[in-house]
Length: 202
Image (cartoon, rainbow, N blue to C red; front, side, top):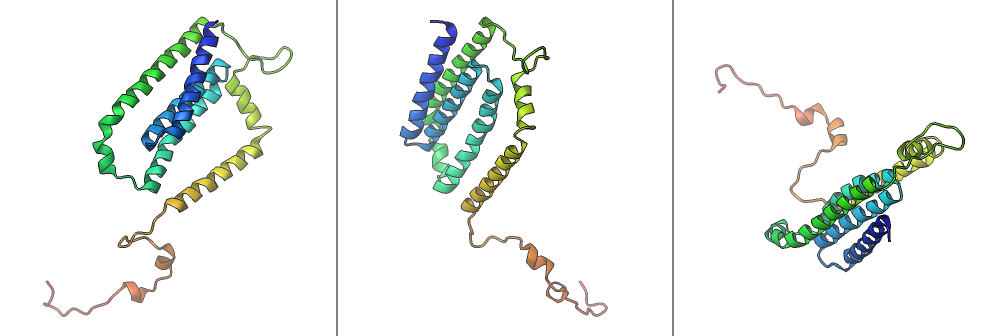
């Protein structure tokens, strides 16, 4: 068994196990931690097959979006922040285990890069200059699939607006700005003229 194959099995087993724990865990905090672990292991699998751009995007986009996901979970479930802070120390053990696993896997990935042979991707057939995976993907994405890329951006914009609309709550006693009412107000409703006699001021 080669080193790359062994590392693949390690990442695959941890990915599947963490994905199962995301569903099986009863605590939402534990589910988020296992979800982050699953994303990191999936990114490691992408690195093993030479797709470093996809691995970077998975970590930056999805792991970054986990914080937003957790925020919406807290907003939708009305989690008590005081009670959550009181039980913070009980998550230290599972957080330490996840951190140690991630550190070991990062060391294994770096070791694979050092031990493995350096490979380069050609931009096309024939005698053409060398290019990286990120450059090739960018050329294809922003030339052949630019309209689909813009459509995906519009879909994400609609999803963001829908998420904000679902979590927006009308609470009594909170003063909100009404632009239409401010624009159409009359001077008589906002300005009051008073005649003050000389010497009667403060």
